[in-house]
Length: 375
Image 1 (cartoon, rainbow, N blue to C red):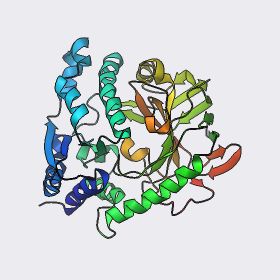
Image 2 (cartoon, one colour):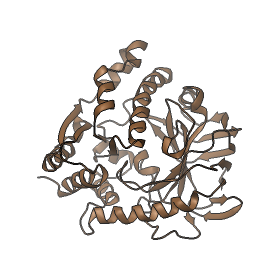
Image 3 (spheres, rainbow, N blue to C red):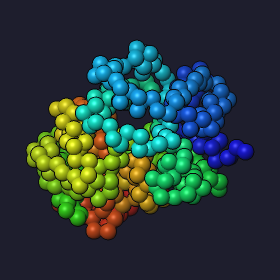
């Protein structure tokens, strides 16, 4: 029996997030466990006159490559991937897996080589997105593995995912996300005038210079669900310390209790209670990987719990996150890297954020709302 919420999500993704038009070529990526959503997206794209095709991968291929591949094989990008990155009109990625811990024991250096290849493709994709040449969105199809990570039953996790996307009945989902877009855009325009942020919380006192960098509303077009505003900091303008209470699950490996210290924009000290070798390997990816490429406010207050999935966790209402590595062209970045790693700072109880010395955020909320902010 088909879940109507899957069809609803497919319609939201094709009609709102991607804005598919007749004749556009769409690629749909996913593991085999995502086939119900892949099928619904394919149907929706056909009905809109687009030209969809699917790239459904069997589970376990990454494990084989990382366990048995040579360095050349780990770094290889197939020519077909290069061509499609240049020619596609639309791209939909479904970040779902039947085993979210399959890569936990992979050697950090081998994983770094594989990730560097991945982010070279992603960086080119973002260049085309910024230029208006490609529409792309990443989403998730609920699986038992992701439900287990979130410490929920599959039924409860499905309710959580579809509720966060607003496709569980009731309000028109496109109408909802259009209102979210208006509120987030209003907040972003207010932040455009800020020169420096100071983030204060448990074991955290971090100054981030954002002068001259535009803020971008994340309103459901690049991610679904969504709900944040972000920018790319000035590359030499980060100083101080920050602690991330939430574990980071990055590409199948867990790093816990991350603490970073910055001087003149760069990480000068990094530690973690677990996954420290992986942490250090990622920071050493390249010259830009020790620099912040993003700072963001999480503003989706319907996402109110930690799920060990960055798609949801970076939008948790009341949190902030930063990303080590490459920034965003549309936010004025000059930092280039094969890494982009989001880390979440929980400010919902004790956090404060100052904008040019003025307290603007306390215990997880802006003190003054910008339009209809709660999403």
